[in-house]
Figure 1: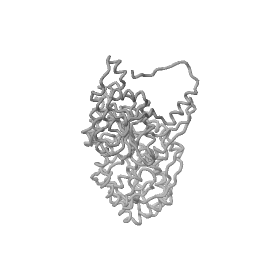
Figure 2: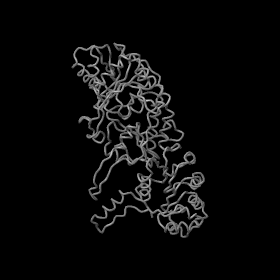
Figure 3: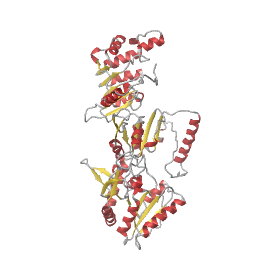
Figure 4: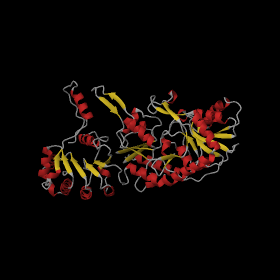
Length: 559
């Protein structure tokens, strides 16, 4: 977002991540972040609101903070997301994740239950649109590191030392395979933070594992503490670091794996979860070729000690790399390093040329909906609000139509307020379906009717009237209006006449339209009535069978 400060006023609210600390860099980026945090504090003191929130955290912490809320997450490293993640997802207007694995797991997760009040069977799933935007390659100048390594050939592993990273097995398998070899393993790790106490705890844990193996020739090194981006680049490019290894159970993306890949370091890992997005390159035949040393794995239930309520579900699964396969790959990369290095160089070339900052930052901004782009979907639904934003009759009715898009076709939903001339031009050959469009300016209504050839209009009230109801207009203004001579009336008349078909909710509504706007082409109009899905009618039926009391509560009214 910093790349587009021409369209955004950016404010930052820092949040804690577990028990990790802040990295106190003294550079231009950190100076900018600190300045934006101060600006946010002042903005809040003045009690000013925000137009959009982008919430970069785990989904169970997402909230409705602004008119438009976007959840951004690495997703999950297992085979399903927690129920609360689905509930929170459906409160968002958009979700952006960093890998196809995260998206696929989100969309495939479902929970079935029963409404205790109605007895209706309900399904909890994600109904919010999800886009995938990967991390970009960030070119960084390397800073030389003096690691004092004993041997010329060393493997590298980078991660926090927790259950998901499977670090204990990685260390044990490395030692068992290389106990008599002149090779090393550099562990860039910590348990919780980078403090001195954590270093001691990490050292003790590592010494406990190594001591079980007796007298060994191979070496294991601990690299603990903060490293700058330049120092991390120096680590990946160190002449004695030959390969990055990982026995992770699963990754939302796998940032150290990605950084190693675009620095040209050979990689040993399995292909399940987020890292599959960047460890392959496309071939001329359309298939994808792995350019890393693949490790075989089994999917199995997560360990009890890894269960994290609301994040990692007890009945979810993740990958268990196979010991024999991992050891075989350690041996192969050591003995045939030149072959794996050549593949790593090809992967580096592909990533640095195709996964650029300019491209990925642009994708992120377009995913947010603030820069016009050609839609990849076949159908474009436009409405002031959709059912995940407001549970009104019009929104629910339109949602039932969204769900009836023909098999094999795709659709997207865009709020009326986000429609621009450029967006219309880029997508003028698509099929458009318009619902409530009170937030479309008269100029934009005219622009659409003059430039889009294939669109349908579903009218839920009376858009030619500023009050969206001629009777309400007469009551409040004390007189009726000659709508067909107003700019809005003329625009709506042309909008209906240029549509493929315009649908009304009732014959009464249609009659009011034809009397108010006499130049409407009646051949373009048809009565559709409200449309609702089976879930809605099942709920109504269940509610109708409940025992009733002669009491009413009026929550709100628009009049």
